[in-house]
Length: 211
Image: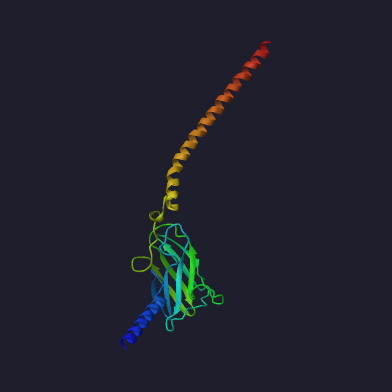
């Protein structure tokens, strides 16, 4: 009897583990109820590195039933905000129910986060008849902050786009000065050559006149 009870306990523990795993939201995401819907938001791939393609991930469910929303139209948009910059991106389904592909209710907005730091995803529009105006910001209690990829690069650390841009901005004044000096040197050489040719022509004319 004890052996049978122990077996039941093991089965129950295994079922709890499986159910807990399938019911839990994606790692490093944040969840908010909006009217009749539950929105779970974060990055599509984590950890998230600057300069690599990633996506805003929205997992959309019916709050009452827990079932995924499969028919989200183009009435919901997401604006990605970083510091004083922002850009709007469309949300598209990352699943195909008929083909059995992806996770039902998984919607994405793809882009390249090009700078490390915290990003805000601002959702506006409607889900069915429900108006939506909600923001989700990355951080320790929500979803991943975008990281500088150099910490994970091996064996050679490649500069980021921002670092390359800064380097170009720093080099442009020097290159412009060198270009100006080079142009002035070229013009000086051309002037000397033209002057020399003028002297040759004048000397030739003088000789012909004396002859």
